[in-house]
Amino acid sequence: MIRQVATGIDVSDRKLRLVRVQKNYRNTQLLAFAELDLPAGILQSGVIVQPPQFVQALKELPKRVAGSHWATRGVHVGLPEQISFMTTLSLDSTNKEQVETAAKRSLPLQDSEMYFDIAVSRTNKVASIAAARRDLIDVLLAQFDAANYEVIGIHVESEALAEALLPTPLAKAPISLIIDLGSARTTIAFVAHGAVYFTVSYPSVISAAGVDQQHLAGATQQAVTYVREHFSGVGALAQIILCGSGANLPQLDQWLGQLVQIPTQIGNALLHIKPNHMSKKMSQSTQFATAIGLALAA
Image (cartoon, rainbow, N blue to C red):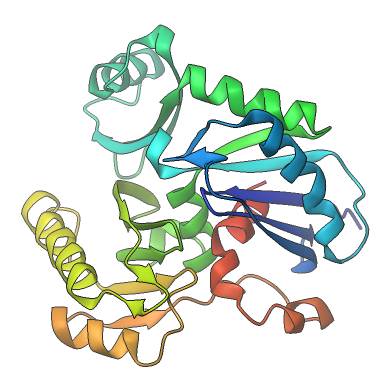
Protein backbone atom coordinates (compact mmCIF):
# COMPACT_ATOMS: atom_id res chain seq x y z
CA MET A 1 0.00 0.00 0.00
CA ILE A 2 1.42 3.37 -1.05
CA ARG A 3 1.49 5.95 1.73
CA GLN A 4 2.20 9.59 1.00
CA VAL A 5 3.26 11.99 3.73
CA ALA A 6 2.61 15.67 3.06
CA THR A 7 3.28 18.80 5.12
CA GLY A 8 1.57 22.17 4.85
CA ILE A 9 2.79 25.41 6.44
CA ASP A 10 0.44 28.37 6.77
CA VAL A 11 2.24 31.74 6.96
CA SER A 12 0.58 34.86 8.38
CA ASP A 13 1.74 38.07 10.06
CA ARG A 14 1.10 36.65 13.53
CA LYS A 15 1.42 32.86 13.26
CA LEU A 16 3.13 29.91 11.63
CA ARG A 17 1.05 26.73 11.54
CA LEU A 18 2.20 23.31 10.38
CA VAL A 19 0.20 20.17 9.59
CA ARG A 20 1.52 16.78 8.47
CA VAL A 21 -0.78 14.10 7.08
CA GLN A 22 -0.40 10.61 5.72
CA LYS A 23 -2.53 9.73 2.72
CA ASN A 24 -3.35 6.45 1.05
CA TYR A 25 -6.09 5.42 -1.36
CA ARG A 26 -8.53 4.79 1.51
CA ASN A 27 -8.12 7.73 3.87
CA THR A 28 -5.99 10.55 5.24
CA GLN A 29 -4.70 10.62 8.80
CA LEU A 30 -3.26 13.46 10.83
CA LEU A 31 0.34 12.76 11.88
CA ALA A 32 1.41 16.01 13.49
CA PHE A 33 0.66 19.69 13.92
CA ALA A 34 2.38 22.76 15.36
CA GLU A 35 1.73 26.44 15.97
CA LEU A 36 4.19 29.24 16.63
CA ASP A 37 3.48 32.89 17.48
CA LEU A 38 5.48 35.39 15.44
CA PRO A 39 6.74 38.54 17.20
CA ALA A 40 5.29 41.75 15.77
CA GLY A 41 7.21 43.19 12.83
CA ILE A 42 8.69 40.04 11.27
CA LEU A 43 5.97 40.09 8.61
CA GLN A 44 3.93 43.13 7.67
CA SER A 45 0.93 42.72 5.36
CA GLY A 46 2.29 39.35 4.26
CA VAL A 47 5.75 40.70 3.40
CA ILE A 48 8.85 39.40 5.20
CA VAL A 49 10.62 42.49 6.58
CA GLN A 50 12.93 40.75 9.06
CA PRO A 51 14.36 37.72 7.19
CA PRO A 52 16.79 36.49 9.91
CA GLN A 53 14.02 36.40 12.52
CA PHE A 54 11.68 34.66 10.08
CA VAL A 55 14.30 31.97 9.39
CA GLN A 56 14.75 31.45 13.12
CA ALA A 57 10.99 31.04 13.55
CA LEU A 58 10.90 28.46 10.74
CA LYS A 59 13.69 26.51 12.46
CA GLU A 60 11.80 26.64 15.76
CA LEU A 61 8.47 25.46 14.30
CA PRO A 62 9.31 21.70 14.03
CA LYS A 63 10.38 21.74 17.68
CA ARG A 64 6.79 22.63 18.62
CA VAL A 65 5.29 19.64 16.80
CA ALA A 66 2.72 17.49 18.55
CA GLY A 67 2.82 14.05 16.97
CA SER A 68 5.31 12.15 14.84
CA HIS A 69 8.88 13.33 14.42
CA TRP A 70 9.97 15.57 11.55
CA ALA A 71 10.69 13.18 8.69
CA THR A 72 11.00 15.24 5.51
CA ARG A 73 12.14 18.68 4.38
CA GLY A 74 9.46 18.94 1.69
CA VAL A 75 6.61 21.36 2.46
CA HIS A 76 3.67 23.04 0.76
CA VAL A 77 3.46 26.71 1.67
CA GLY A 78 0.42 28.98 1.76
CA LEU A 79 0.76 32.51 0.42
CA PRO A 80 -0.72 35.30 2.53
CA GLU A 81 -3.66 36.84 0.67
CA GLN A 82 -2.05 40.30 0.78
CA ILE A 83 0.75 39.26 -1.62
CA SER A 84 -1.25 36.98 -3.91
CA PHE A 85 -3.99 37.45 -6.46
CA MET A 86 -6.79 35.03 -7.28
CA THR A 87 -9.47 35.33 -9.94
CA THR A 88 -11.40 33.38 -12.55
CA LEU A 89 -11.85 33.91 -16.25
CA SER A 90 -14.68 32.68 -18.46
CA LEU A 91 -13.28 31.02 -21.56
CA ASP A 92 -14.35 30.93 -25.18
CA SER A 93 -11.69 28.31 -25.80
CA THR A 94 -9.70 25.85 -23.71
CA ASN A 95 -6.68 26.03 -26.03
CA LYS A 96 -3.63 26.27 -23.76
CA GLU A 97 -1.96 29.22 -25.52
CA GLN A 98 -5.20 31.20 -25.82
CA VAL A 99 -6.02 30.60 -22.14
CA GLU A 100 -2.56 31.72 -21.06
CA THR A 101 -2.76 34.88 -23.16
CA ALA A 102 -6.20 35.75 -21.79
CA ALA A 103 -5.05 35.05 -18.24
CA LYS A 104 -2.04 37.36 -18.48
CA ARG A 105 -4.25 40.16 -19.75
CA SER A 106 -6.46 39.83 -16.65
CA LEU A 107 -3.59 40.12 -14.18
CA PRO A 108 -2.37 43.40 -12.63
CA LEU A 109 1.33 42.61 -13.12
CA GLN A 110 3.69 42.22 -16.06
CA ASP A 111 4.77 38.69 -16.95
CA SER A 112 8.32 39.35 -15.74
CA GLU A 113 7.05 40.63 -12.38
CA MET A 114 5.00 37.62 -11.30
CA TYR A 115 4.65 33.91 -10.87
CA PHE A 116 1.27 32.58 -11.94
CA ASP A 117 -0.60 29.33 -12.35
CA ILE A 118 -3.73 28.42 -14.29
CA ALA A 119 -6.21 25.61 -13.67
CA VAL A 120 -8.80 25.07 -16.40
CA SER A 121 -12.21 23.50 -15.93
CA ARG A 122 -13.19 22.32 -19.39
CA THR A 123 -16.65 21.35 -18.15
CA ASN A 124 -17.49 24.89 -17.00
CA LYS A 125 -15.09 26.66 -19.39
CA VAL A 126 -13.57 28.60 -16.52
CA ALA A 127 -9.90 29.23 -15.73
CA SER A 128 -8.80 29.76 -12.13
CA ILE A 129 -5.78 32.05 -12.06
CA ALA A 130 -3.39 32.48 -9.14
CA ALA A 131 -0.57 35.01 -9.23
CA ALA A 132 1.92 36.65 -6.89
CA ARG A 133 4.74 39.14 -7.10
CA ARG A 134 7.95 37.41 -8.14
CA ASP A 135 10.22 39.47 -5.86
CA LEU A 136 8.17 38.69 -2.74
CA ILE A 137 7.96 34.98 -3.54
CA ASP A 138 11.70 34.79 -4.19
CA VAL A 139 12.34 36.24 -0.72
CA LEU A 140 9.91 33.75 0.84
CA LEU A 141 11.54 30.78 -0.92
CA ALA A 142 15.02 31.96 0.08
CA GLN A 143 14.05 32.06 3.76
CA PHE A 144 12.56 28.56 3.68
CA ASP A 145 15.73 27.32 1.99
CA ALA A 146 17.87 29.02 4.64
CA ALA A 147 15.82 27.24 7.32
CA ASN A 148 16.53 23.87 5.60
CA TYR A 149 13.09 23.31 4.09
CA GLU A 150 12.39 22.27 0.51
CA VAL A 151 9.33 24.08 -0.85
CA ILE A 152 7.67 21.68 -3.26
CA GLY A 153 4.39 23.58 -3.66
CA ILE A 154 3.05 27.12 -3.26
CA HIS A 155 -0.67 27.71 -2.92
CA VAL A 156 -3.02 30.64 -2.47
CA GLU A 157 -4.66 30.56 0.96
CA SER A 158 -8.23 30.52 -0.37
CA GLU A 159 -7.55 27.40 -2.45
CA ALA A 160 -6.27 25.60 0.64
CA LEU A 161 -9.35 26.64 2.63
CA ALA A 162 -11.64 25.23 -0.04
CA GLU A 163 -9.63 22.00 -0.08
CA ALA A 164 -10.03 21.55 3.68
CA LEU A 165 -13.58 22.77 4.27
CA LEU A 166 -15.62 21.68 1.23
CA PRO A 167 -16.66 18.14 0.30
CA THR A 168 -15.15 16.39 -2.68
CA PRO A 169 -15.34 16.56 -5.56
CA LEU A 170 -15.03 20.33 -5.26
CA ALA A 171 -16.80 20.79 -8.58
CA LYS A 172 -19.99 19.47 -6.96
CA ALA A 173 -19.62 21.16 -3.56
CA PRO A 174 -22.24 23.73 -2.47
CA ILE A 175 -21.53 27.26 -3.70
CA SER A 176 -19.90 28.85 -0.66
CA LEU A 177 -18.55 31.98 0.91
CA ILE A 178 -15.64 31.03 3.19
CA ILE A 179 -14.75 33.56 5.90
CA ASP A 180 -11.42 33.06 7.67
CA LEU A 181 -11.46 35.00 10.93
CA GLY A 182 -7.74 35.13 11.59
CA SER A 183 -5.87 37.03 14.28
CA ALA A 184 -4.11 39.24 11.71
CA ARG A 185 -6.52 39.34 8.78
CA THR A 186 -10.11 38.48 7.89
CA THR A 187 -10.25 36.83 4.47
CA ILE A 188 -13.38 36.13 2.43
CA ALA A 189 -13.39 33.76 -0.55
CA PHE A 190 -16.20 32.89 -2.96
CA VAL A 191 -15.94 29.32 -4.22
CA ALA A 192 -18.18 27.73 -6.84
CA HIS A 193 -17.89 24.61 -9.02
CA GLY A 194 -14.37 23.92 -7.79
CA ALA A 195 -13.05 27.41 -8.59
CA VAL A 196 -12.20 30.39 -6.38
CA TYR A 197 -13.96 33.29 -8.09
CA PHE A 198 -12.71 36.08 -5.88
CA THR A 199 -11.06 36.81 -2.54
CA VAL A 200 -10.86 39.91 -0.41
CA SER A 201 -8.85 40.54 2.75
CA TYR A 202 -9.43 43.05 5.58
CA PRO A 203 -7.71 43.90 8.86
CA SER A 204 -8.84 41.34 11.42
CA VAL A 205 -12.27 41.76 13.01
CA ILE A 206 -10.91 39.80 16.00
CA SER A 207 -9.47 41.55 19.04
CA ALA A 208 -8.94 40.84 22.72
CA ALA A 209 -12.46 42.13 23.29
CA GLY A 210 -13.95 39.61 20.86
CA VAL A 211 -15.43 40.08 17.38
CA ASP A 212 -16.12 43.50 15.94
CA GLN A 213 -19.60 42.54 14.80
CA GLN A 214 -20.20 45.78 12.95
CA HIS A 215 -17.14 45.35 10.73
CA LEU A 216 -17.82 41.62 10.21
CA ALA A 217 -21.41 42.33 9.27
CA GLY A 218 -20.39 45.05 6.84
CA ALA A 219 -17.68 42.96 5.18
CA THR A 220 -19.99 39.94 4.84
CA GLN A 221 -22.91 41.91 3.45
CA GLN A 222 -20.60 43.65 0.98
CA ALA A 223 -19.23 40.29 -0.20
CA VAL A 224 -22.71 38.76 -0.54
CA THR A 225 -23.88 41.78 -2.57
CA TYR A 226 -20.81 41.57 -4.81
CA VAL A 227 -21.40 37.88 -5.45
CA ARG A 228 -25.03 38.43 -6.35
CA GLU A 229 -24.26 41.36 -8.64
CA HIS A 230 -21.25 39.88 -10.45
CA PHE A 231 -21.67 36.10 -10.34
CA SER A 232 -25.41 35.53 -10.64
CA GLY A 233 -24.79 33.25 -13.61
CA VAL A 234 -22.65 30.94 -11.50
CA GLY A 235 -25.53 29.94 -9.24
CA ALA A 236 -27.08 30.89 -5.93
CA LEU A 237 -24.91 31.22 -2.83
CA ALA A 238 -25.80 28.19 -0.72
CA GLN A 239 -23.82 28.66 2.48
CA ILE A 240 -21.31 30.62 4.51
CA ILE A 241 -18.50 28.73 6.26
CA LEU A 242 -16.55 30.26 9.14
CA CYS A 243 -13.03 29.24 10.11
CA GLY A 244 -9.99 30.71 11.84
CA SER A 245 -9.32 31.63 15.45
CA GLY A 246 -12.51 33.69 15.78
CA ALA A 247 -14.90 31.14 14.30
CA ASN A 248 -15.70 29.36 17.55
CA LEU A 249 -16.99 32.38 19.42
CA PRO A 250 -20.38 31.44 20.90
CA GLN A 251 -23.34 31.75 18.51
CA LEU A 252 -21.38 33.77 15.96
CA ASP A 253 -22.52 31.51 13.13
CA GLN A 254 -26.17 31.82 14.17
CA TRP A 255 -25.97 35.60 14.46
CA LEU A 256 -24.30 36.06 11.07
CA GLY A 257 -26.65 33.61 9.34
CA GLN A 258 -29.69 35.47 10.61
CA LEU A 259 -28.20 38.79 9.59
CA VAL A 260 -27.55 37.88 5.94
CA GLN A 261 -30.28 35.23 5.67
CA ILE A 262 -27.87 32.58 4.37
CA PRO A 263 -27.18 29.27 6.18
CA THR A 264 -23.97 29.75 8.13
CA GLN A 265 -21.88 27.14 9.89
CA ILE A 266 -18.52 26.67 11.55
CA GLY A 267 -16.27 24.81 9.14
CA ASN A 268 -15.07 21.31 9.87
CA ALA A 269 -11.35 21.51 9.11
CA LEU A 270 -11.05 17.76 9.80
CA LEU A 271 -13.70 16.89 7.22
CA HIS A 272 -11.27 14.83 5.14
CA ILE A 273 -9.20 13.49 8.07
CA LYS A 274 -9.85 10.04 9.50
CA PRO A 275 -10.24 10.37 13.30
CA ASN A 276 -7.24 9.20 15.32
CA HIS A 277 -5.44 10.13 18.54
CA MET A 278 -3.81 13.16 16.89
CA SER A 279 -6.99 14.62 15.46
CA LYS A 280 -8.54 14.36 18.93
CA LYS A 281 -5.67 16.48 20.29
CA MET A 282 -6.36 19.24 17.75
CA SER A 283 -9.03 20.96 19.81
CA GLN A 284 -8.99 24.20 17.75
CA SER A 285 -8.99 22.64 14.31
CA THR A 286 -10.64 25.61 12.55
CA GLN A 287 -7.44 27.60 13.17
CA PHE A 288 -5.52 24.98 11.17
CA ALA A 289 -7.87 24.94 8.16
CA THR A 290 -5.35 26.54 5.77
CA ALA A 291 -2.46 24.31 6.86
CA ILE A 292 -4.67 21.22 6.60
CA GLY A 293 -5.79 22.25 3.12
CA LEU A 294 -2.18 22.77 2.05
CA ALA A 295 -1.27 19.25 3.16
CA LEU A 296 -4.36 17.79 1.48
CA ALA A 297 -3.59 19.59 -1.79
CA ALA A 298 -0.13 18.02 -2.00
